[in-house]
Length: 100
Ligand SMILES: [Zn+2]
Image: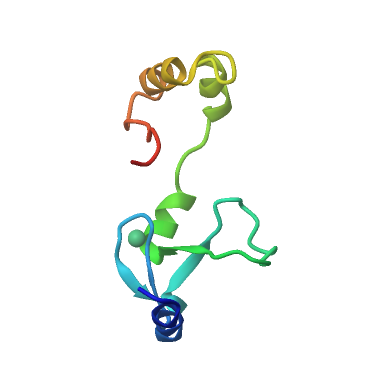
């Protein structure tokens, strides 16, 4: 896919939700900046979340997250060890171990 095609997609104003893969119109999507800084727009491309997924993000309970990270050995244990421990402590979803 060439440069022209990408421009064309922008003009269509459709984006893909990074959480569920749904294609939504850009006006229905929320910008998601993995760096947490939506105001510094220079040279960045944003990722998008659809509204349902954006809503879910906001309702994630972060209570105790810091404690769990510390208990799991964040910054001390090796990555593998940390992920294993964190998984046990969180008692829930499998942590994402990066992309393939
Ligand atoms: Zn979504």
